[in-house]
Image 1 (cartoon, rainbow, N blue to C red):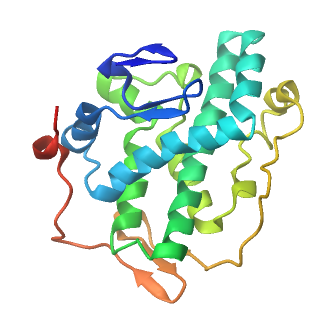
Image 2: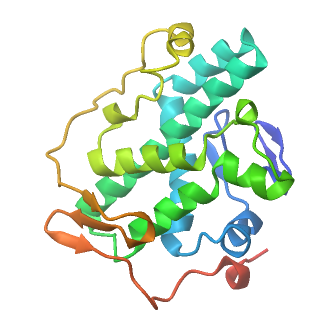
Length: 231
């Protein structure tokens, strides 16, 4: 496909182009997410799309531009580390979207959160590298480990606040100092917490959103990209 960022092959998967402000979704990747990576369900697909839209938010608040500039003067290891922080922040923003969307439209159903967390884990660099070549090379990560991606998606989901998605603070201060002061979102505000509380572990986790408890579901019809792809 041709974008303002150049030509992209399907092997790239979904991506966001900051030059034309568009998200490009590879439907073959979405089918592969279910078939090969085991990330089933419509909310798994929603997480992938929301992650890419998260990059658009980063573009609007100036994060992408500042990271791109910082990476030009960085070595490979530091450049990869900066990119990981960008991707983890987009995961967190995807969680913020899920929280806000549920607050305004009550979109979450039983099992949706598990689908999103499972999808975040499925696209972790460590899991993908182990599956493709049998070993893991953390210094080559560009998106973060499964555990990191799950952690930041959950952080956005539980807080519902962009301010909670600062992946450039804490450890790795060199990366943050290279970027300069954190970007601020115009008009960002804090909403009263709905109170998402996670209990249990793994796929047995229960989540409380407001007064509604979301538990793992069974038997619900799922969106299947293997049979619904249109070319």
